[in-house]
Length: 389
Image (cartoon, rainbow, N blue to C red; front, side):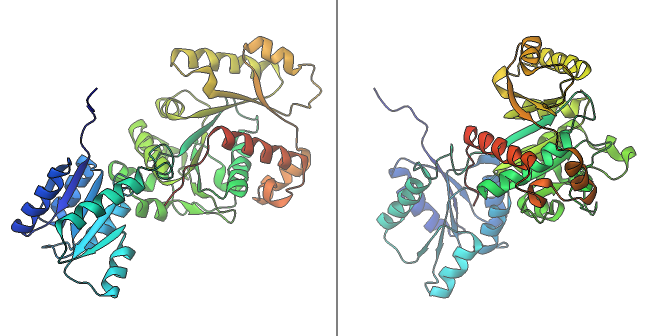
């Protein structure tokens, strides 16, 4: 049977018409589809719109040169993972280093034989399409984990914060924690972070976020995680709309291996956007009749939203509370297995919250911390992190 796969697409950014014609002919003879741009600005626009499989950039371009184009491509979440071959008449080692530092994956000095161009292109594509760099691994989006409860007071934020730190600690992967409780988020308090920047700073540029903007707005924490805080004033919450949340989640997932989202206890459009985009929903409840009833209602809603039961992981917090509701009874009532049980951390957990230091950092040997580390391991085993360049 004939191979019906679409040809790989290459974007060639070259202002010399004769050279562009030659390179295009060589690449088309190898079976590639070729897009042409004659300036850095045109090349950047085409790369953002067409997402080619590989980009060839000449260093000497009118306006934005090849080095600047490489840097911009690496800052854009849409194009940051596309392999780039830089070509130039400059062959000094300093020029090659400058190209690689700008973000190019390979450097080809002029003059070169057309066959060498074809060889370099094939080698780069083979490298990026190998199992190590395949779209299902290195360049797949990160995993989104939403933490939700249909009522407050069940320890949702405490668990989200400690699990974020635990996942970073256990894997060394990049982890972002997004406080999506836009009215009364407390992630900043739990981590002792001032609201210097918040999600509001991303709203104006939500349609074209890149790593530079994200790095400016997400606050670094001593644990190694990055944190996107909720608005400081509750009345500003309405400035964040569902389409903003969708764009921000997409950008975070392109940049971080794991994106943990602390949702607000409501069913507004923004929360539903998070829940629908999440790979896993950690549904937090306690062994109390009211909390279990609300959890049951959420499961009914999840079915209507076509959120598969395999994506919902029920976590029973304070599972050792002597209130007469056993885990087996909870599972029978909800007709859904309990994935995780977490004991009450008591005064130690409360003290850590008041100090703004997650218990996983402050007392890693505490039983609560050990459970957080174990849950983090289980979640990461089910959703292996992709490598972030």
